[in-house]
Image (tube, rainbow, N blue to C red; front, top):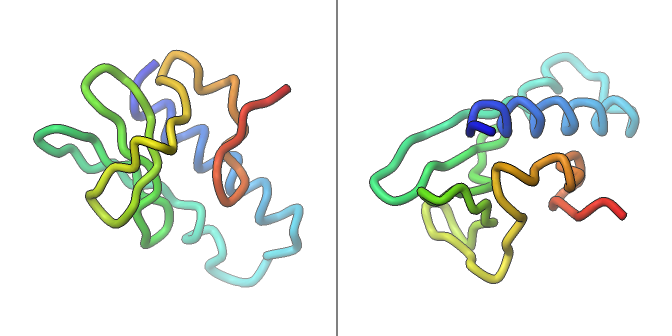
Length: 96
């Protein structure tokens, strides 16, 4: 898998959850829009106007402590296992 495919899945599941929760005001789609920013060590995947996930060169997906600061305690699998997780909630969780 590629970072772009991960970002597309994240955006799709976030948008679906927003619609299910009744967020249908004009512009709500902006909250689910993803942006990819390449860095020296990590690739950042932002959600809306906030940082959300960081991916290392090996494809491991991590949460963040603050923008640009990886949180190694919040590991969400790899780019190869993105379909094992649900990305539409506040934080990702592994599907059972």
